[in-house]
Amino acid sequence: MACINRRDLGLLVLRVGTGAVLAAHGSQKLFGWFGGGGLDATAKGMEAMGFHPGRESAVAAGLGEAGGGALLALGLATPAAGAAAAGAMAGAVAVHMPAGFFNQGGGFEYPAFLGFTAAAIGLAGAGRYSLDHATGHRFDQPWVVAVAFLGSGLAGAAVLGSRTKRQLAARSDKDQTEAAEG
Image (cartoon, rainbow, N blue to C red; front, side, top):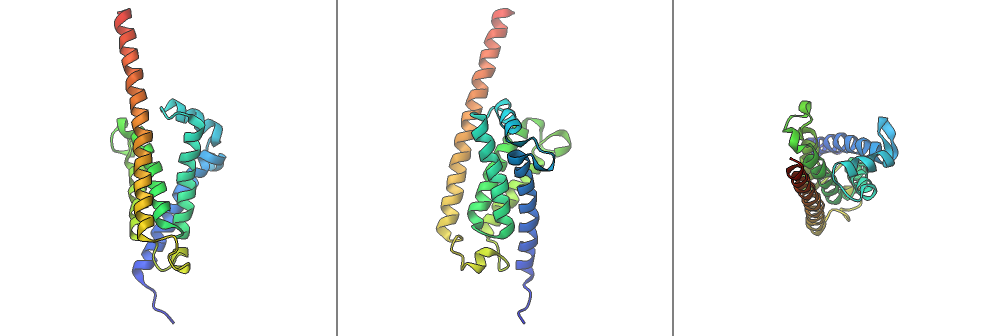
């Protein structure tokens, strides 16, 4: 009988716990499960938060969370799953950033923690008790790590940069309107 490896067991617990939380959170966005608003409400919310187009942004965030979370829990394509979930959480961090750090005040503590945890699992690998291990690490190669995190980083930077640009333009327009009226 093989000896249980504590490191791999710890990765299993961390993967399943983090993946389940992310999958549930994304399912709220996509399907309205667990008290969530579903895709239509999430799309409206995304528009209000400055993500355009709203529906595509809602689908991307929901898939990054639900899909990335499910894959993390299974330990399948772990680098891509971790990068996708971390990228989705980067968007959530940007939304919560104005409220400061702590979650109790609406801050970014919780999405940052989920994002860093997903990224760490994606970089460390799923461990022995995973589908990646069972498939001979077909989807857990060094090049997958590089491509997944580079792609997620570039996509996140583009989306958040576009959002910031729109927000600054809207703020400038508002300031000009107020100055003209005042």
